Length: 203
Image (cartoon, rainbow, N blue to C red; front, side, top):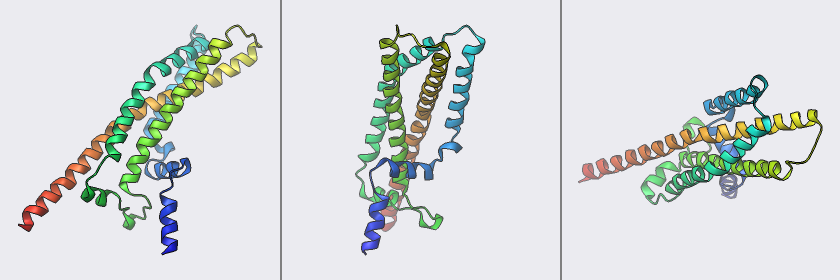
């Protein structure tokens, strides 16, 4: 009994490591289409200033301001969806959603996996907002600071790649969240219909 409790406690930790394990089992990041679309967009945007007369620093500042302006609204949308998930209070539906499919060797339930998608997206979008603010602050404070051209180019390249990738990936995850909400609604509707059919048959 103690070993089962320990195993359950291990599967239900609320730390970042557990979140990433659940998310990875459900949706491996490197197999995600959103990851690779974000990577392609990032490469295009990062290489573009080399062929066009575009300032890397100006592009970083533009992206940082965009992150600060739009990601609070995106975070609000995701938090609303997450609250919808965790506020589910139907015990019949929860009983179905919280059982892992052991026949497939799964350790985590459908409910945990869906929760991990919301949590991962929210963390990534919060990180995007923080990084955007930090980059904007560095640009604003250090605007008159002079450094070697080669060093500036390297720093600008790293900053542009990082900010562009995380913004692209975090934005594309909105599609995943929308599908998640739809999927959750479909699952709820399925079990409600099944329960209604069972009640009619039992009369």
